[in-house]
Image (cartoon, rainbow, N blue to C red):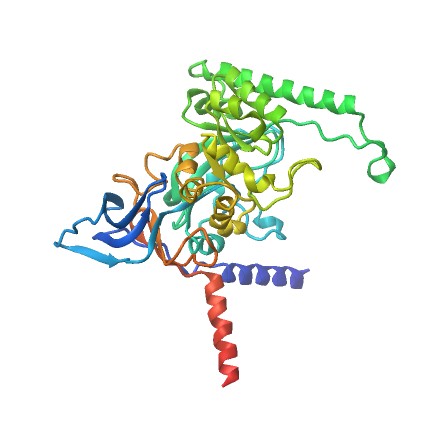
Length: 436
């Protein structure tokens, strides 16, 4: 037993040593910097040729075409022929809440139970994760770590991806409460696994109706609680809902079919809330309804199969373009955490299926910032906002030309090294040496 415990302790120590971060967060900006000569993709649909970006103390001072650069104590970065983009934002991801999918101890994005409104993802966000550094190399500089599971999953927060701890990382804590709209599973008939008969369509529909009834009761009680003033006994689940009803926190509802999207929006309206719909596979069927209710949408990655057998096989590719061209605020997302490095290329795919390239850029920059309520400080390269952007040698939405050469988060010149690059260099050196 002692030998086993010693071995276990040694293994844990070894794992901790391997997991130590070797890339320190950048120091605070101390000198004003001017980037000149670049093509500036503002993020709001505007492109400035031969632009000049002046920034200091972590904020953008000015963005001009052919701007004059002050000569006194200003560092200059000549970016002629290159492109500057706002930092990309990864929406509704479990980035920083999971590290190794096969190791349960590193998974911290889901809690037991159906109603977990008191859960806050930000306190579990791991700034020592090896993954964010790999995303920064493709221009993803911010993210929305999001809890999952249950009916009401808890609150997400918006973070920047170069920090010592979650307090440093947070751009906005508790930006949105996340929930999943109850749906009726598809009935296939026959027997389920292990010879047990499946529930009838009527029983499944009744179960869904009961779930919606429970959800209505939860929100009604939480709203009544929020209007009580200072209650004698604190209910943590209801207390966490106060900011949702006051409008200080968004409500993100996962819904796929047109019927569920309409039901989810009407449900939220009943409690005085304008929700953000995530998933939204059939949102293109209810565009007028969504526009009337000023609904933002977080749509899934285009590299996916359609939900139904009789759907247009190309609909996942076209969905974002159809919705954005109709005038809706569309945010593009991608499943998982390490996969977020491909987020800009998903936006690039959307441009091939009917969306203007600058509008596609907005789906992972300014539109995302608007949906999360942080557009006053980030999401575009505009005067007064955080100096969070990067310089690419080519088109950042194209995997063939995306080459991030320098990146800034709140004015800090961040380190673009990562474990993947280190391993590439290590083994490139090894096999190069063997050939000699």
